[in-house]
Image (cartoon, rainbow, N blue to C red; front, side, top):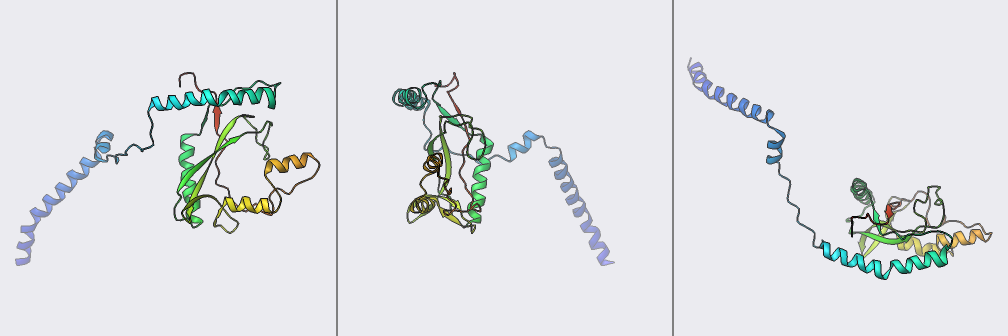
Length: 231
């Protein structure tokens, strides 16, 4: 009997608690997207220190126009291929979502390869061949144009080195791969290509690295003269 009276006294408390819980659930279910966004405010991202002003960008772009474009144009139209029209590239662009996916892919492969930290994304200047296709058969969209390729680096002995994934799944330094190829007298791909044209069939780095190695180098970007509304 005493237990029954005790339970009856607690019953109102249980009822009130249940009602409050139901109201909170209904409130959550009926929240508008705007209300949900206001409750989940993203963390504020501070501007990187390397951001430059529009004026600074315009100034260094003008410097490139003055000190580089004339030399490129002269070389391409008077020495390299005088019979072909040429307009120097003024920008290189990569798809925004593809860049995010690339960074995620690099992080994934680096972690699997035992890299403690990817330190930098290094960009090398490059120049496309005056050919219709690359060695892999893909079309050269911008023959003779300048480009960039991107690759990740890691820190070793206080220095940053670009790396790839070796046959054993571990990170290897590209500088070691390059030195190995040069020591074996293979030279660069360009030098090998010239040798092949001379009638000697080269062994394209087969001894320096096998097909099981994995490159993390990003290229095949878009490029061309600037949009008329920019700079």
